[in-house]
Image 1 (cartoon, helix red, strand yellow):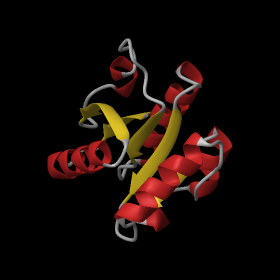
Image 2: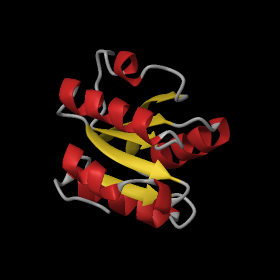
Image 3: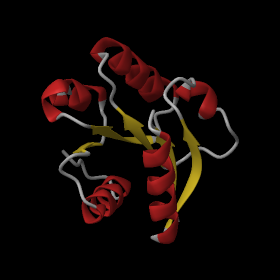
Image 4: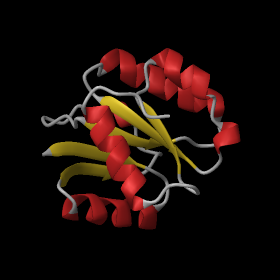
Length: 126
C-alpha cells in the first residue's frame, strides 16, 4: 500500500481525491488545507510515501515550502498539482528534486494513478 498525504485548499477536491485513492489501492494517511504547515503535518509518526501538494498562485511561497519539505523530509516523494501549467515553474520543480506534476484541468483518474505508481517506482512524472 502506498501511503499518501493530500495538501490542497479545496475541501471538496481533497475529500473526493481521498475517497478515490482509498478505493483504488492507496492509503491516504492525512489531508490538510494549505494554511496548515506541511512540515508540522509531516512530523506525524507515519510519514507518507508520496505527498500530493497543490501549487498555489504565490510562486515564491510555494517553492520555499517545497524546498523545506525536500530538505527536512527527503524520503517523502512529492507530486505537485496545479490548475494552470503556465504558472508553475516545472524546471524549478525538477531542480528541487520534485518527482512529478499534474495539471488538474487536464488530468483524469487514470493519470493520477499512473503518476503515483510511476513516482513510487522511482520515475519522474512531468
